Amino acid sequence: MNNPPKMERRRLFTAMVPVALATAGVLAVSPTHANAAVDVSHKISIAGDMRMFTQRMALSAAFVMLDIEKEHYLDVLTDEFHEFQADIDLLRNGDPQFEMEPEQNKLVLEAINTVEFGWSFLGPALKEIVDTKTINDAQFTKIEKINTQVMSLADSLVHRILVEYDSLPVDLAYQIDIVGAQRMLSQKMIKEAILVALEFEVEAHHEMLLGSMSLFRFGLDKLAGKMAHNEHMLPAFTGEMAEQLQQAEHYWSELHPVLEKLDQTHEMTHEDALLLSKEADELLAVFDAMTAVLISAAEQV
Image (cartoon, rainbow, N blue to C red; front, side, top):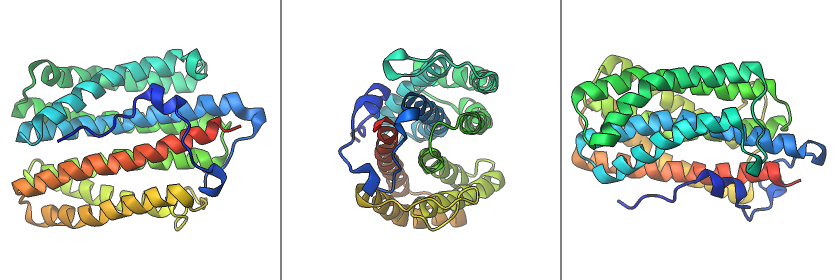
């Protein structure tokens, strides 16, 4: 499998997406809040990356263990392993080139430190796979015991940033967060389906899979303006963003029956695994593209 286009942070922050933001259901940012809005939007995006990485890395470990697109997922795991620590440092220390100030808010710093503490357990388990390019049952069990906990810590970091800073319009801040959550859920629910099919702590992962599928469906509806987020209705995406959302709906229509089948039968064929691998990459690519537009919205002042 060819690797999907990698959303490198430097390219994500500097590339200006050619879309009329005002007609895409994405709000512009007031010039008086320009620098702060850029800073906060990047913080939310980076913390959201870390939230997604926890599930993408665990999913990659599962595919490596199954010997499904092994080289592809070893590359994914290696790239995101190194980027996770870099993201922690970026959030803490800032980056003037991208208008990110060193973090001063004590509560945000505490949330960053908590994520780093969780990473001190998950990181070494993943590093063994990165170094040896192999994985055994004990290593995978350790990763699966920890990854969702670190995901929750990263999710708390995202929401701490949203609470502590108000530089972004509420609609734009929520859109960045929801799209970031969709990125994470696209990987999490596929990982959980694999674990159900493998009968790995099947009862717990069955419940998690159903929850992830529901949250993913809710996220699509929120971005389409059909469902409130925190009792707040978002403007429906239009134009190019609506087309991206429609593409996500298409991939979801292909993926949903496969997830339901795995949940009910606990049986996974090689073809099922290949389809899950394909959908994991395609869904992530769509939401990556949406993220690029939303980050650019904070820079259009």
